Amino acid sequence: MKKGFTLLEVVVAIALVGIAFYAIIVTFMNIVTNQVDVDAVTKGTYLAEGKLEELTARSFAGISSESGSFSGNFSQYSYTVVVNSVEASDLVTVASSSNLKRIDIYVTGGVIGSSIEVSTIKGNIE
Image (cartoon, rainbow, N blue to C red; front, side):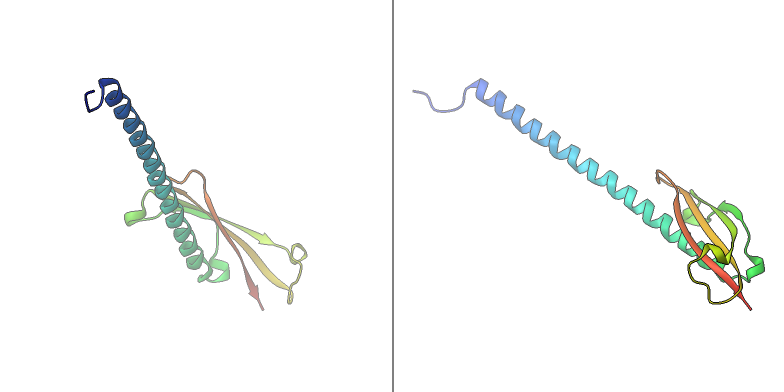
């Protein structure tokens, strides 16, 4: 009896190895794609939080709705600021009579599938 593999056994082995490599490559590509999405969402969230901090540092009268794009390495991201008045009756607890503004920041762009929203309320307590 001869030792070794038949041609059929070699072809089947190569086919199985090929299928295994294909599965590994597809899995790796999905992981890389998901990582890119996570990075884009993280950048968008940081940009939204930074814009929110910039707005809350302004005087109460200086806060208004606006939109634009970020600069530098983040020029593919854009933002929209929506500012609405909030009535004290809309809140559960209000320390005193005050003027309130709700600030909503929406960031889109990059490979983000939808917008990222960050919100706060700023008061002008007298």
